[in-house]
Every structure is written in structure tokens, then in C-alpha cells.
Length: 347
Image 1 (cartoon, rainbow, N blue to C red):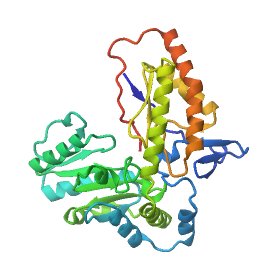
Image 2: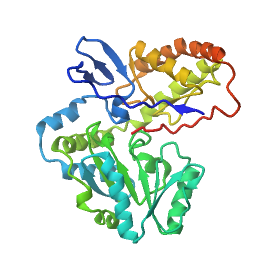
Image 3: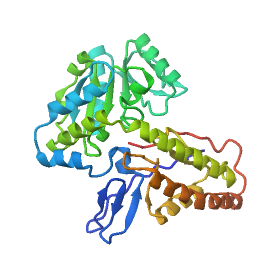
Image 4: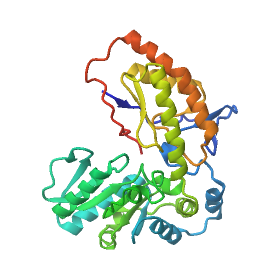
């Protein structure tokens, strides 16, 4: 079975090394530098410690109204906005609002290619993660929600503004009734948001939405302003497509294509492995070559051709080792390697 390489980073031990971050690079207290392809789980879209964002945070001015207006302006149509302290609070609050609005209790998750788990009867809401979802699936879930009288919720925690300047809803042209966002709104700082139809936003329970911190709101206002003025999605898509194409060529040349692939949305290319031993080689090899990456390669505005070239050089060295390890392990049983490009656990 194909496995997405996503391993949550353990908390740093007390008294451990403190990292300094800037752009797409990290330095420990010894001055050792690493190229970051994790980027706070993909949420630091502008790069770590972006000067304009940090300046807004240092200013400390109230920014909730500015952040609400900036987020609404980025999304298709007229969208009301409510913020909360953390991304994990946004989706439950959105589902509860759908229950109050429809008078129903059930919420279903839409699986790409399979439909709503358990059917679409008596539903308050259907939730879909639109990252990598084909347009046909997004159109189908929209039709299913309408037919069931249910609220369609996009979980844009991962897709956010990396796949398109207006999120997955802007990329696809399919409008959800509600959408939830996370820390990408504030370039990595803790925050969540629920956006959508005004009547559904009014159905939110304020107790479900603890207020975000002033620094997070300031960071969100600054981040969204920058994303509106200079969207990162087009550049990330080009960089990611170049990376995927070159790694695919190298993988085939090394005869490792039955063991490894770099798949998924070009802005978040996801390494997938046929065997856990190959994943172990990848993790050790990337760490040993000065990269911070524990799953999808989370491209950001601070990455450029030099960083992608360094990553390609690492794959040039590692892929023959994957092939050698594959020969040592022997043939893969038929049907064992299934490419699943949904990065499990990615925030």
C-alpha cells in the first residue's frame, strides 16, 4: 500500500536547540543551516519571519476588521467571515452551524471517487477536503449537497491560497456554502476562520469560536493583504511542476518508479513509498543533506530555483539507493503499492 510520508514533528525538549527562521531557511544555536520544506506544515506561505507580517505584529494595532475584509475580498462572491483561535475549532463550529440551520444532525465526509461516506440521507453537512479533488468530484459533491438540502463545507486548511489566489473554490469555480481556513491565513501563526453564506455565519455559536490573539489577527491582516497584491499560487505551481517533472525523470532513470513517486498538487508535492524501508532511507537521506521535510514538500514564496535545484540534487543521489534497497527486498506483491496522493494528517 502506498504511504504518504507525513510524520508530525515531536515537540522540542526543554533546553534543546532554539531555531532561528527566515524565509525558507532554519538555523540552530550552533549556526547550522537547513532548507525548510515543511514550512510549519505548509502554512508559512510567505516564508518564515516575513518583514511586513512581523512589522504588523510588532505594531500591535487592532486588526480583526481589516482581516475580515481582506479574507472576504480574496474569496469568490460575497463571503461573511468569523475568526477563531485555532484551525481545529473552525470545522466543528461550521458543522454545528449547519446542524442549527438545517435542523438535522448527520455530517458526512466526501471521499474522492467514492462519494459521501454512508450516503446522503438526513444530512446537515457534507465536508470535503478539496486539495487534489478533481473538478468532477467537486461538482458532484455540490450537486449531492443541493439534492440533500445539506450544507457543503470545504476544508481549505491545506489548499488555502497555495493552489489558487482564491483557494480551491477559486481554482475549481465550485462554491461551498461554508469554508474553513487555518494558520495559512496568518503565515503560520495560530488562527482559524469560517467563511460563507451570511445566514450560516449568523448560525455560528460564538462559544464555539474563541477569539484569536491580537498578534495572529495582525499577522492575518498583513498576510492576506500581501497575498491579494502578489498571489503566490502561480509561482508555486510552476516550481512544483518543475520539481515533479525532474524527479519523475530521475525516478524512471534509476529504475525506482515501482518504489517511489512524487505526486499530488504541484504546490504541495507528496512523496509516496511502496515500502517503509524506502521511506526510512528518504527521511535519513533528506535530513543528512540539510533539509527539513517530514512529508509533503510545502513550497512557499521564499523558495526559488536554487532550493528546488538542491532538492533535485538530493533525489539524484537518493533514488539509486531506493532502487538498490528495492532489489534487496525483492518483488513487491501484486496490488501492494497503491498511489494515494492524499497526505494523511497534513494540516
